[in-house]
Length: 430
Image (cartoon, rainbow, N blue to C red):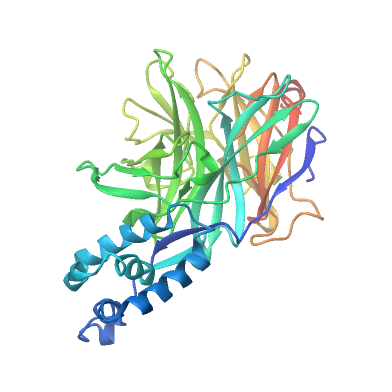
């Protein structure tokens, strides 16, 4: 990557892996012109399975297990759960034998390769489990945006470590991945969606796939935040963009360090845009957030309610040639002795996305103390091509022992890693 010579770049790249799949519902329907056909496609398929004899069911089960069992944990449970969903819509399915139930579930399920097209826009926070951290280093939790068929975005996770001696390493992803599961009792009247995801404590098993109408076409760009409350309690939160196919808005995730999650809608005018990033603690008793609701400037917002964000004031405006079109944040601010370090992105000529930085006053983050006049990372000639060329972008970095650890996406295609000394970065600001 081009830019200031501040960074030590890792040779580690995370590329899309089409072999990582989840099982998701498949819902065959007639086009609108044939929607009144009777029986429905679902009814016809169920009737066909109910008409199979024991030998036919055994053959279908063999094909199913041979194809899928090695790729998915608890395959039968997944298909039985899908059968129960189908039975609620097709009453005849209630008469299915135990042998027919998973077969019905299989006909209404599909494998989905959630990162076949892209794996990018990473975010990084301190791993709550520091067992095995390298000498002088740290373990981290990483989120990434994956894109699969239909340009649908989801969020996947990895764990890894960094040390001054060995640089960045990322643990091998689990061979199985599990999409979110919503239980009826877990959807509350206030719009909070409670889900289970993954079957163990390995974060790489969890895939946050769209589960609500607001997310129909994607969950994008999770900005993770290790939030420390006034009483010292630590909670893992994250803001992400929910896209329904027409409009994008911000929502909030709680508990992503484990395999249980809550997805919270957010209200207010600022939440109707994307790209929000939460400060990792309250300031003067209030929650503080960065936004970009006008798609041009970085805004500062304050609220007494974590889920309501209105108003706000422009904090950082486009100023330099590399950010002249628009600006945004690259994740939650990082608290330093000197103030709040904000990693930013700017858009310049030919829609080039570059990365910069700014420093805010610790007591009053509405005061910008300094910013980089030149980008610290820019697309380079040998790493500029991809799904969206000329883009480097991050959704969140962290600092360990005065070293900035920066994961970033390249060309909306794959993820890379770099590190630099915080003191060198601050010196480069004006």
